[in-house]
Image 1 (cartoon, protein in one colour):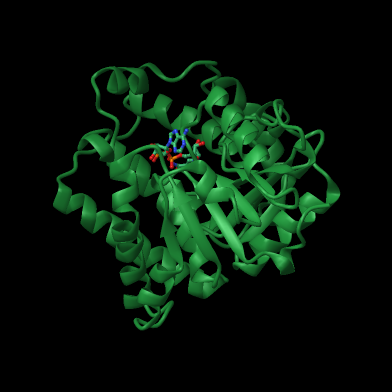
Image 2 (spheres, rainbow, N blue to C red):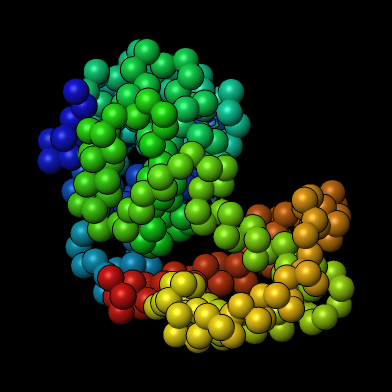
Length: 315
Ligand SMILES: NC(=O)c1ccc[n+]([C@@H]2O[C@H](COP(=O)([O-])OP(=O)(O)OC[C@H]3O[C@@H](n4cnc5c(N)ncnc54)[C@H](O)[C@@H]3O)[C@@H](O)[C@H]2O)c1
């Protein structure tokens, strides 16, 4: 038997990077005591500052009162080992590098150190829980909860059970995500990339192709998508959009355009060249666009401000 969502008091987070610190924040914001760890000292020392900065933006936009910031931060405890992070936890989320052997080892260790009732979730972007849990004695308590960046703002969390995940584990994971005001969606098959990474990768393959072929500039491709697909998709799903437009039209358009679309089964050459040069995007100061620390901070601030407006409007 695993813990019921209503009984969860303490949450553990393994990995304090882009996703881990934000997942810890999302639980702490809703009143949970959170213990977080990482193998990197700098990641650990930076956790509270990163969370504080996120909370200040959220408070500025009126999503939480300013007076809550210190209380939320006080609920997050930074510890220096996996064992200390999970020993007393009722629900743990792992968010370390996307590396299967690392995740498999962590789940094996957590299985030993956690209480038998504790639910163990992975934020993997791609690996099936059946593989991650392969060394566990109690694989029935392991499940994928796949968040999106920034995790404290984007509502969706994909919930993907493995072959041995129990119905109780699924229920606890689903209900705790609802309690912290997320929108969990069940992925019924252990398909590589789950739902959203498959859809996003399919779109991006064509985006990279159009850029490489010189059909439009990077700025114009982004502007076109934001002011059309992005505008609609914030409120309507792609299937409802098609229903409203008329499936007969969609069928004709698909038959005409699909044979022309990029169908390559590898990352686009343009993307590979950027990565080979060390241009990883915002984190290195250059990708499709260029960034200074100041311009990046402004982009993130503006992104979060707009996401918060959308959150208030929609959820
Ligand atoms: N970045 C995204 O947009 C995004 C979105 C959804 C899911 N994910 C998934 O979330 C996970 C984390 O991604 P991220 O973007 O936060 O990566 P990141 O590189 O920002 O952070 C990963 C952290 O894990 C730590 N780590 C590595 N091995 C560890 C170990 N054995 N024990 C404890 N800590 C360890 C690293 O020191 C690092 O701080 C990955 O599985 C990724 O695929 C990422």
